[in-house]
Image 1 (cartoon, protein in one colour):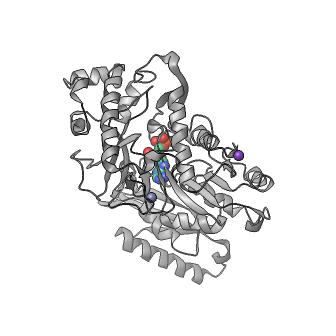
Image 2: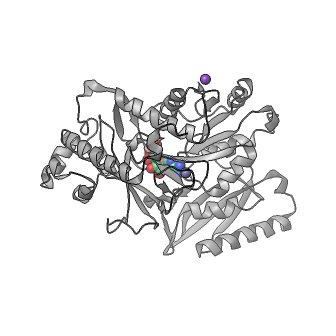
Length: 430
Ligand code: ADP
Ligand code: K
Ligand code: ZN
């Protein structure tokens, strides 16, 4: 029933396996210049970590450690054994690189194949990968997993909507991988290109790489006539294949045989009580080229308590609320872009894109939201638009507890990219 029997491993056995793997990965990581130094600074011997109970002894690793050890200071094997290099997309600051051995690439492909299989993808499916290739892990990372499963895999890459649609049609594509904001954008050109959902054969969309709300998932499912599943990963932990939704569509199973997961309070660095939101911290349990211990992802989520009806024993995390460094503080109020998105995307008149603009007027910060309106609702009658504007303002105020300035704009007028969406434009420093 499962792609890998490990998916249903009894909890106790899974934890035993994690303990054994943790011991191994800690002893291996001591061979890297970075961890050799960190262990020494902390007066820590690798053999002091014998199992899961010893986890708190290990220091956290941060993005700054990856930067400081650029390019090769975290390798625990000779560079000659590495076969692949990837980099983070650099959403925050300078890019960081991660290396993989041949075994690492294979283990990663297995994990991604496991995700695909979990949501019903099979070798007879035709799969189109619409994420960018190159250094970004959503390209090759997903690609190898789909091929590992046996799907005919089309490396379409990002952008070029016309060609995307031609490929979808000509090869009767059944499964796509696409960044959610680009999925919404691509759907806006369906009409102009004469695309009928009936001409397409899509049944599944794998969406991820950026935070998105349940409302966006619903929109994608309707626009494409598919089931859409959330996919989470980060280049430091390979990329895609870290956590993925099962058919229940209620949280993403973290593959705990490969990643040891903790959720901590970002201020006290202590674990949060089960079920509460905090920062996700991950340790690679199987990577041999460049293991990373207790990596602070900055991503905010929570463990979903209880067992999943699908029978997998690996714990689930909730959709990512945002990054701890995404939080906007305005007039003393903390706001996450995701809160704005949830409100907007539940309003039927609202189109597929929005942008938060932070400005400074005199000494005051201003929170402005530009909102695309679907063309059928973008009417000439100002009174109708004014009413819509007031309604959106009111709904945002109820959620955010400050009154934003709402600006209605025409569909497809806001900037969009075929990569990760830029939801916030901060002009305050200028
Ligand atoms: P960068 O940190 O430069 O964006 P990555 O390309 O490695 O580099 O992106 C990983 C990050 O993307 C994650 O840490 C997370 O913030 C975000 N991300 C990835 N998948 C999802 C998802 N399904 N939901 C929300 N955020 C996601
Ligand atoms: K095939
Ligand atoms: Zn499940």
